[in-house]
Length: 213
Image (tube, rainbow, N blue to C red; front, top):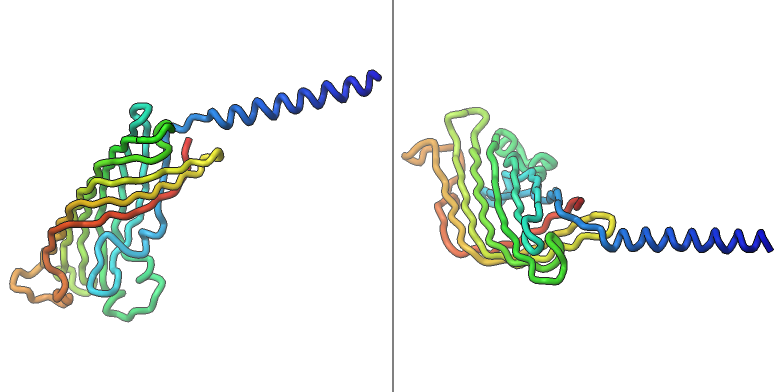
């Protein structure tokens, strides 16, 4: 009888401990996320002619500011596209050097019952990128590219109990892309047929994944 009583008490303690752990997980409060998107290294934010010359290597940090609001800041290095590095496209591509940066800012207003940074949200979004694309064989031959994007976005961020975060968003806004050439007369080894300043409406779509804590 004593052995049976001890077994029952042990089982009750184990079940109580498991329940308390489950409740603790359910009430776990995530306030911050660190995210990235490795696919951005394949192409963006600048595409030259057909081949994606540039890639972005980014990291984003998001922090709750109010129970239903958060701010997200992103920084990225704009360098050679990983797609170009993995392919054999000849001297015309491998002789091109790329260097630049991208910064982005989003302020989220969450509209579901979840606390930030979980659930559906609306947000103003702005990003600015700048890069110089140069000819390694002639460093005075280069193109400087800038891109400004301002948009209103709608998104959803899911965070699992383990802290995995996935953020997907889309929106509508304005973009302004400009190209400056090293030679004002237009004499350059780069193909400039598609490299003209463009401003207009933009459709924003993106996703990032990372870890919440």
